[in-house]
Structure formats: structure tokens, C-alpha cells
View (tube, rainbow, N blue to C red):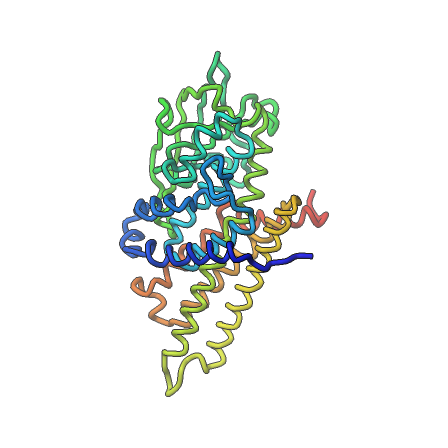
Length: 384
């Protein structure tokens, strides 16, 4: 039986992160967004609480939280923090860099990188997408040639989340193109290695405080000891990280949707038109009810996926369903919020339009909504 009741310890952690987020992470967000600037202060403050290491065992510098506690805490982060870019940077760092090192790294790699990643002293990036390998990620062209005690990497990676500020990347390259997927391997590539260059920072519509970049590898010499897992094991690493990422990267969006709903309900009660509060108009109240329904169904789906993962179940289909449903619910609720606020919702100073711009990206990263539907269809026996 699924039980979503929370212990006192979990509630205390949730409340701690909520209060911290509200007090420490909401300064100068309009300016940071306009400047497309990384929230260094917010990142370091989160690191001091080890938010970047929520599910990482204590022996490696993390909090040691189970997955349900982790998503409950991340939900509080989204409820209290309005900087969706910072939250996305933390999630990408956690699910696509730290967790693969925890799962596939050897003892030396874990001890070397995880404590600093958990404390925010290192920032992790994930480099698999390429100009001709976006949704078709296994069609990558980056090559890794073994030479003595090192691998020589050559290729171009784009859409690297955290790229411009990362200290290390999980890079995927093929050691044998003739083997297709089976030739792909994962590497821990430190940003200061010769031949590893962040060529450009990429501007985008939303999540503007998250840094996105293009990584170029030109005869980049990576020590053989930085091979993550085994040669040819890259597909397993990527599948693993996508299962976790798609399942839980939108945990904070549940908190964001709740914050947005609360804000809109308060506004609908206070804002008067035609002699009464706009919340009394059916067309407005219906939007608020729909926002409430999306919030509660999204939360239930997220908790179920967390429970399944805690039970040791595979969640490949459920993760795709969660990513698809929450992302589309989040976007629609932001659209409804703008309509409820009317012209004010379109203004930068009210911070509602930024919520929409930030939410739209969730339908694209970690696999588009179309990719998620394709995955779900395959599990239903409708695919190839």
C-alpha cells in the first residue's frame, strides 16, 4: 500500500528549506533575469545546506535523504524560491552529474568529486547533446581514442546545462563508431583540461539564470582513470540518469505551481471589477479550480513515482509520464495565471510572465513532450 504520510523529521526538513528559500533566494531576480546572470550567491547558500546533495549518502558529503524525502524537500525549494533558473541548475547538477558518479563511479571518483559537488563547491554539467544529436542522442559524433593512459576526445557538445559555470562535465563519446550504441562511453571531464573549451554562452527565452553553453573538445586528453563505469557502458549511464532526471527534475515545479496558485487566489480575492472580486466571476474561478486540479494530480503522480523508485522498481514509463504531465500542467497554469492577472500579468514587475517563460522550457529539456509520448506509447506496445 502506498503511504505518503510524512515523518516529523521530513516535515522539519521541508519547513527548514521553505523558510530558507523565502528568506535567502529571492533577491534581485528581475535584474538577474534581465542580465542572464547566474545566481552565485543563491548557489553557495544552497550548497551550505547541502541541497545539491540531498540524496547523496552522508559518507560522500550529502544529506543521505531517501528519494521521497528528496522530492519533498525540492518541492519546498520551488514553493519558497522564485528563481526557477537556480532551481533548474541545481536539479541538472544533481540528477545528471552527481547521481551518475554515485552510481557508476569507482571509490576514488566518488571521494574525489562528490563531497564538493554536494556542497556546491563544484558545479556539474552534462554533455551528451550535439548539433546533429538532440533527441536522437545516440547518433553522437564525439570520439574518444584510447592512447596509453588517457583518452583523446574530439567533438562538439551543445545545450550543456551549467556549461559556462561548470567545473566538470559528464561527457559521452564513442570509443568505436562501428559498435553504435554499444561503443558509447561516459567520461568525467574537468573543465580546466587542455583542449576542453566552453566556446559560447547560449541565450534563451526563459530559465535565464541557468547558464547554457557549447562545449568544444579538441584533442582533449582525459586521464583513463576518469572513465565513468566501463568502456561501452555509456548507454546504461545515460538511461539511468534520464530515468532519475525525468522522474524528479520537476519536483520543485510542484512547489512553484502551489506558490502560483496561492498568489492567484489572493489576487482574485483582492482585485475588484464591476463592483466585486474577480474571483466571483465563473470564468476566473474555473481557471483557479483547474490550477488546483493540476497541482494535486501532478503532486500525486510525482509521489507515486518516488514511492516506486524507493521500492526499487523500474520507472522508465512512469518517469516519462511524470515529466510529460507536470511540464504541460505547469505551462498551462502559468498561462491561466497571466489571464487572471490580465494586463498586470504581462508586466515584468509582477513576475508572472517570467514564470511562464521558465515553465515553457520544461516541455523541452530531458526529452521533449513528444519524446515522452513516444516512450509511453512504446511501453503500451504501440511502438516499433
